[in-house]
Image 1 (cartoon, rainbow, N blue to C red):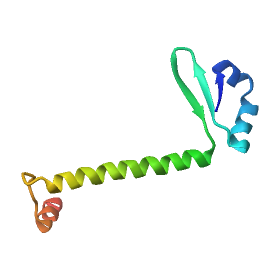
Image 2 (image 1 turned 45 degrees about the vertical axis):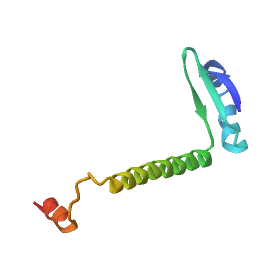
Image 3 (image 1 turned 90 degrees about the vertical axis):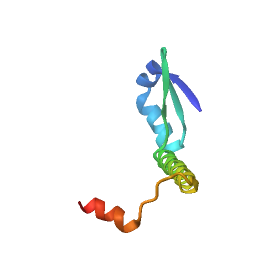
Image 4 (image 1 turned 135 degrees about the vertical axis):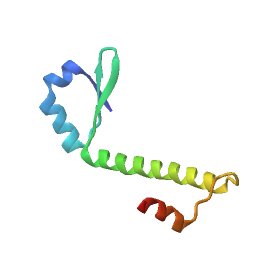
Length: 87
């Protein structure tokens, strides 16, 4: 991964953008006293979003399984649940 200062990124923006878009390069842009910002190709960003959604779904499923296994968890009948929604 290439690392640039924010000034370098500003001065070579078109070139950096082309490296990311066409050479699938990842670039870290360093900012004084702040967290870096990253430029990545669209396909990598789309993969990241899919992986993030999958991780969130896994956490939701683990939470639901934990609640279902909890004998103290209140149970609501399916029909009663939807009857409350209609009210």
